[in-house]
Amino acid sequence: MKKIILLTLFWSFCICDAFCQTMSGADIRKAANDQLNEGLNELIDFMEIPNIGSNEEHVANNMNWCINRFQNLNFSTKVIITEGAPLLFAEKIVSKDRKTILFYLQIDGQPVDTSEWDQPDPFIPVIKQKEADGSWKEIDRKAKKTIDAEWRVFGRSASDSKGPAIAFISALNIFKQRSLNADYNIKVIMDFQEELGSPTLAAAVEQHRELLKADMVLIMDGTRHISNWPTLTYGARGIATATIKIFGPKTPLHSGQYGNFAPNPVFEASRFIASLKDEKGKVQITGFYDGITLTEEDKRALNSLPENEDSLKIRLGIAESDQVGGSYQESLQYPSLNIRGLRSAWIDKEVRTIIPDEVEIEIDMRLVPETSGERMIHLLEEHLKKQGYHLVDSIPTALERSSYSKLASLRYRLGSQPFRTEMNSEAGNFLNKAMQPVFGTKVVNMRTTGGSQPIAPFVRTLDVSAVSIRIPNPDNNIHAPNENLRVGNFLEGIMMCLAILNEPLNK
Image (spheres, rainbow, N blue to C red):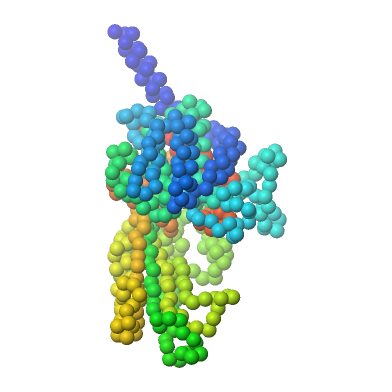
């Protein structure tokens, strides 16, 4: 009987020890540095696989790479079939009675215009260093004895978001090499169409809620706070987009022959655009900000972050900022309205002396949890009507043209929904405790980010908290030509992921 008890205690001790093995902050920093060269090699290899989410071959190639990589890390994998691109699920269960963290990885990237990049191919990444004159020069990393934290990896998805994905994989690789287990079960969901708005993700989460069930969701996506300190972000704004066409004459007209007689729709469009905001940048649509309040405690927390708005203005190249909220951080807590594109007639070498037949206005609205996309589109439509416009479904008929002086159409699309997690949640406390041994007090906790992420389906369907682990440098040019990732940020990203894997969750 004593032998049985002793054996039971022995095995209990061994199981506990396997889960409770921990690395010190110094161990984490050293392990990440030791892994850096291998991690950079893997990042470059992964970035060389083109990853446009609308391209089936790109999706398949990235899917195969991810399957092989996670299976090599001793994860089981499952392809989740959807009506669009598939998702990839991977998991490593250490014990059924342990808590579970679900990690979200974005694998696809934005389209590229090769002619706008300062390298031959955005999908052939290069490493560059900054010269004294501020320009970036490609280097041969293999010819260098040491890795410089200020080098940058240039290429599509360096920051958004293959860099963060490989930082996470590098941390998992260190745990595998050291025969370590996290204190919790790990699930991973990989999204191959995030840049297309993750059109099938919500349905997949609903259908596979048991498979994806977790105690929290950690998002390996998003840019750091402007201080470039390790950043935890507890929410994201949603997005709704709209296309408004304002119609003029049924065909373009000669500006000399019909000027002063046929109204030019560009002037009508300019008056409508001007009606959307006042001189301080505040949206003038009735009810646009309804339901949103910030307490004094909220404002103190938001304005305690390490940022200098004068420096930010200089970096952005602006003299004055819009006055929505009392500070940059406060402005992110409100919905925004942006003209993201404007088109009419021709310009440059194609310019001609005509009165255009129509003006097309592209709008995006960033949403917060208090403002649903359906409601905000309705408010925009009502504002358009208040400006005197009669709305049509497509091209106006002859009768409509003869009956109404102001004609417009409106099409819209609802994208990602907003979400927000409390900072003092279990997830927030867990992550801050994990970061402290490695980064001390140099960790930024942001209430929300200005951008959008497709995480609301997890929050609402699984009833969990979600926090974004921010790795890339704030000046990374995501979605634009010359997207890049600072090597020092990639290194710290490995440290952040290691710290998370190292932190106990079940105590």
